[in-house]
Image (cartoon, rainbow over all chains, first blue to last red; front, top):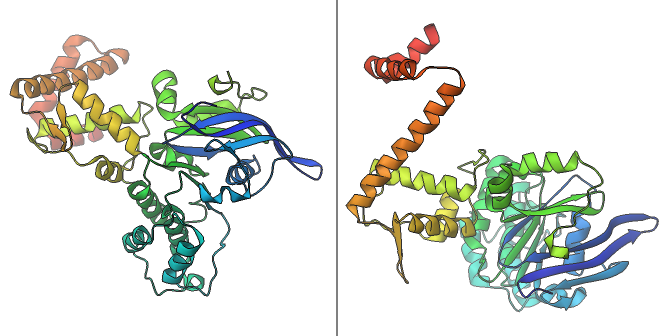
Length: 246
Length: 132
């Protein structure tokens, strides 16, 4: 494994009963970057993130994160933000911060309070009473307040209006620490997210179609991320066989 | 976010170009400190790694200098800033002439068109384009 790669998949498949959610994934991702997972619904993005988080076990193959094989105890080095509204609604924002501080040794409560103010959230508000937008903000505060080397966010922008998306992205840029952290997120807001990304992972039908740096797409092919996605997905049967596997 | 980078040129080059224009326009003066990487990333809505690349590019162009532990500053080299101004002008003119030539305009037509446009003034020119 290359020293700079934070995530490595070796021939990983995940099967639910008779259906493969992802099949034969082999790739590695570099540390210190913001990486976007893009692709249609059902292409395997969420499953791939959950495998990285150690929340589900591969049916076959191995997943390495920070040099260790991924498992449930990985949660110490992975901060995972689910796309579900998984917060306890009766807790206030301040109580959730205290709760997370006890749960995760790397949780930085001071940073969390700073982000809360940045996001204009009130510490006394109950999670259950928050609007969808503010709940999205609160979830991001909790995910980014950990110093874990790998932060995973599953659809942090989905279902949110443009202004909320913008404030979440600003918060993300100002609080992620790329000298120590790698951020991987899945999203459908491809054009909106492009300026934030170093690297994009394109998935389709449970496969990784391709992995490219945004600068490379633009410098060498003159393509924006949306152009590239359209082009790659219109040429079926060309699985990813890039440098990462060599 | 506030900015979009829909042109397929690399984002770091678009942002470097924007900062050069701000310098030429005088919005950023010689010796001014550029925002920290994080602040610039937030303001432009881009990845901090991209801003680092932008500052490295400006340094390579000798338009900015990074001082260890202090940040990145617009150069105080007046001669360099004058050539930067020239470079930006020539770049724009070159791309304009290329466009016009592609559409089949002859050199004299282009020069005459520019001269007439400037004579009419910026507001009149826009209207002229619409009424014709």
